[in-house]
Amino acid sequence: MSTHQEISSFIWNVCDDVLRGLFKQHEYGDVILPFVVLRRLDCVLEPQKEQAHKLYEEYKDKIDDPSPIIKNAIKHSFYNYSKYDLSSLPSNSLKLNFDNYLNGYSKNVSDILEKFQLEKPIEKLLRNNRLYLLISKFKEVDLHPEIISNHTMGQIFEELLRKFSEMSNETSGEHYTPRDVVKLLVGLTFSENKSDLEGEGKIRSIFDPCCGTGGMLTIGKEWIQENINPNIDIKLSGQELNPQTYAICKSDMLITGENPENIHLGSSLSDDQLQGKTFDYMITNPPFGVSWKSEQEQVKKEAQNPQGRFSVGTPRSSDGSLLFLQHMISKMEEKGSRIGVVFNGSPLFTGDAGSGESEIRKWIIENDWLEAIVALPDQLFFNTGISTYIWIVNNKKRKERKGYVQLINATDLHHSMKKSLGDKRKVISDAQRDEIIATYLDFKDSDICKIYPNTYFGYNKVTIEQPLVDEDGEVIRNKQGEPKPNSKLRDYERIPLTVDVDSYFDEEVQPHLPQAWMDRAKDKVGYEINFTRYFYEYKPLRSLKDITDDLLELEKESDGLFQQILEK
Picture 1 (cartoon, rainbow, N blue to C red):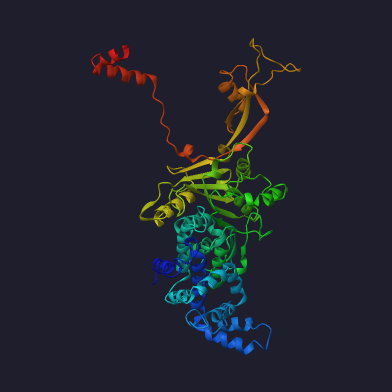
Picture 2: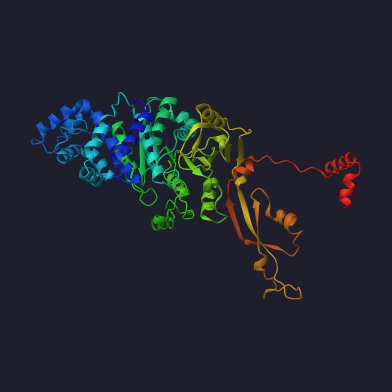
């Protein structure tokens, strides 16, 4: 077994062999995922296992903390001083020896294992004589780094998470973003900033506020080093709400030599663990359409603070997507930062003028931060078939982009998969990804690319009033002699920002409603982005002459029959 599919399938079969009948299906991940982490840690440490044990025995009574000596000697930032690992654990005295094995890990690993909350599953496995069987199965999986790269290891975790999340009916988009989507996202986020990433001695930071298992962070770093600068020092940071995926991410950072202390547990919305921190680049895929009602008190309180992340407005509590974008914008560097985020369609158009969503869009667009939006094919994700969009946000646009938003319609750039994976039936190939990125960098109008000024997306919502009349049809007036408005006839007009409001009213409203007037005190400016409208090919109406000519031709061909039908 050397591919992530083979190893994932083997591990998946372990569920049937060992866990079926003992655990519910939605609990399988709670048992299997921590054992995958333990097996990987064992394989990484195996060459220095005996040395770590000997050093611990030598120094444990001589100094308070032998950790620095052990880490320095074995050239790892973590270790296990127990004489056991999963491969060498004996079947007798299993509970005692297994506890000894787990307790032998260095504190940074122990903190990770704690988040898996293994106590109850282990107790259940022991009680039913299944623990040693499970360990025996994992001994067959070779996860040594020279056999399984960090990249492949990430794929194994993601494939297992996908399957477990299907069984748990996880909310769409949670846990795992397909790699074809991630590669496109990071390509769009980093490709235009080559000059910032090139050169010697460069240090740059990437942050993901919904980092899951850390795949997006590591792919982002890999993309920069493979495509722009192999010597750049990239600092990775993230925050994750789910303790299980947080633990996987942190263990992966530990194994790959990243700083695991930069990965934090908790909600980015109500418990920002990186307050005051700013980053050069931010990439994320927040969960689609997930309620933030449980965090409403903290978010609303911060929204009342003029300096708070959410002061410009908050979306409806059923979907917190735009809150994550506001959170990232608060962490942009003054010298310039770029954000790449995957959204569903809701943040584009949900909410009328004056609503929280519209106010957030207005704030972003009027500050000239929205650089581009790419419409993706549907059926790209494992847990949902909905349409998705990549937003690129930049607070230091290059000169030619200032004042404009680029829209790319990439909905047809995909291949159909031979075999679907959950709801994923489409994939963006490398060539198609390159085409999308090239279109973005080209910054020119084409069949799939439209460039509009910021004001194009805005509109004035104007209140149109009509007078209240009595039974005789006379206009009822107030004490000032002004006509009273009839609330039942009140209407609203959305007038593009590029159109003069008074002229629009004179030409489009007054000829049909001569007694109407505008209540300009109630004007509201709104913003929305409607991809269907921008890329829909309108067909011009046929002229009356063309229609008449066709009818006459039909009359000739029917030898008078058409006229007879019309008369009847």
